View (cartoon, rainbow, N blue to C red):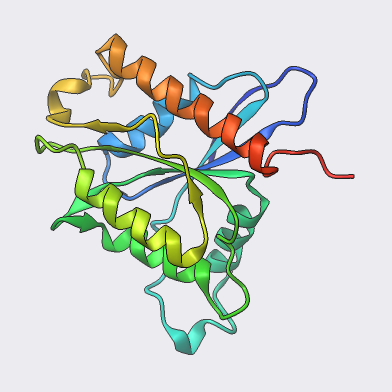
Length: 199
């Protein structure tokens, strides 16, 4: 299921695709993407893409991928920018997110990620807030030719105290940082041309 929020004002809409590394109900990282939908600047939209239905990547299937992979690659290609919520498992990104990155990069010559501006946020019950997952994801971005912003950074530690029972951020400063991340992503996308109107 894809949820969408828009804020437009007579300009080309920068279409952001949000990708969470967690399929867990009550995921703090997915909640960050939902929160970001309410903090969009003018001229931006954010869709949250569900990657939980992607099968395990296999080179045997990359030339004739199943429909959900075709759909996913199309959504990435149609987006102007990417917002990753990088869940951390075992000091790195989740298998769910790594699997999506592999499908998006294959087959050779059909890299759906190529040239996309991006930003990364993360939340974790650990004190580090997913910092190692963010670093690992940045390494992968080099290989798939994605251009992430460097600052501002958002890594929410002790996430169980950062979100209320309604899965909304309870700290105003954290919400403001998330807003700045989304604004910086939109600005960066327009600067590198990802959000420029065609023609």
